[in-house]
Length: 628
Image (cartoon, rainbow, N blue to C red; front, side):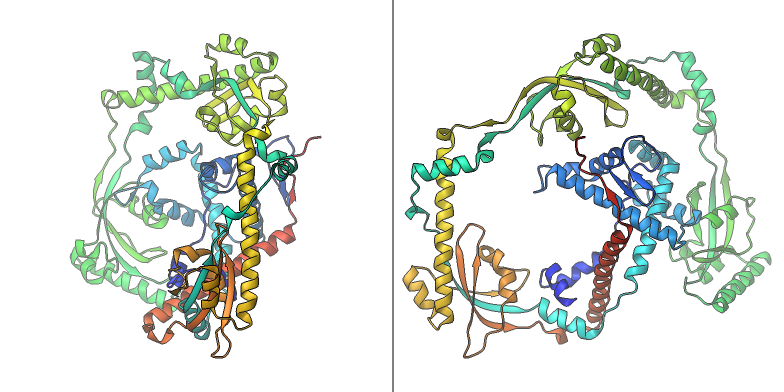
């Protein structure tokens, strides 16, 4: 286990990174769990089927932006997305089989606590609805995803919580992770200038690696786009339309009732015994009796309340709206009359005495105040209705006229646009979207037919057809000869210096001094004092090997060899090893280290558990799709 940790953690204070290990939520990337489809699923886990659209949605939400910024291809990123879909489903089914649940109250409280739904520290209903709309989610869909994520969190935490670490493991980990090693080393340069390559070698390499010397396949497409935004810009509502829409939306446009609330909290820890809960309830009832006898609420709040954020303000929480508070608390607060004090109300935090000190009834906004908002909403509503109608016509016209976009363009008054050339992996403008590139190089489009409507974003679709296609072409030998010669010279130089380094390592192990090597190879001996997170820049690739090498003995020096990224070879002598001083840590830091090691052990255990459950689930995977 400790070796696993050493492999995964880097740095003199690597254990600090354990503090930030958190449960990964995929709130925005679970996929579409509400659609059904007739097409062949790309993966099946139990009775749950995943389709291409589920994969594309998660890929676009989480991974598409990495193209060009990471060493991974689009295919690899999609495979990663598919694995995430499968792993989440396996865990969800396991949670369901174990009868785990997330209550309505837990789910609502979690949503209200999310910072991107808050304004000035309070839940903002308008921001919540706006952000969901931007993701193409209804509140019901989002709540279902959150509930699902909370179930995954439960099962993940239940596995991770079973792990622990002891002080002996923490000592060993700290000593290893904070170990210092002093080394001497010599770098053997690449003898590239001594390498020769004749035409016969270059031509042979050229013939054997034809795929490396091709111009990439390219295409450009003609396309039509249809979007809700563009349709909306052409809709100019009449005054009567806006008045009628205003009357229909009057209730929605009326601000929610607000109540100014203060409270006294007698807290009860989640792990409290039934006796402790009863004591807290008894105390809350005694305070309520004193309030009934006329004692000052603010004074009692300052004396007894265990809510540090409000007790110094007499328990005042300010004005709140429905949906901003915990379920039981909110139900009680909005059932009270102004000035009335509640009986003790139980929440996950303890028992509350609640008083409403002021009520602001929601007043409808005047038409003039919300006219611009009404106009935009009306345009959007009308545009959405029109969009779905036109999308169907676009799909039908593109299908009925597969050899041209003109009929659809004329009927729907759309402009045919043309992209610049792009490849399967990269494009600009609309071709930056992987859906466009995938469709452009599909057999259907390459055969000269229109594509199906492609959903680019929520409320935008495109249909395309091939404008121009250039297959991958072999480059002439003369055009790539210099590249081939340079590559072969470097390959020969790498092989030459590797052979040389192996011979010298053998000689060093037989007793020849490092100084002798340096003298005969005209290399310079250098020394360095290394810790894991501060490697010598030119030896970065050697750090792992250096720290895995045995400890040197007086009569038995330790040598090792490492190939650097640029092809040079390094011969290294381990001069001394000094373990990290665990005893120098303060007791508080020792406790944190043990706790964080336990957390890492739990994380590793969970990953192994997840692999085991996936193995047992035996998901059926039909991706990437094969041609019939």
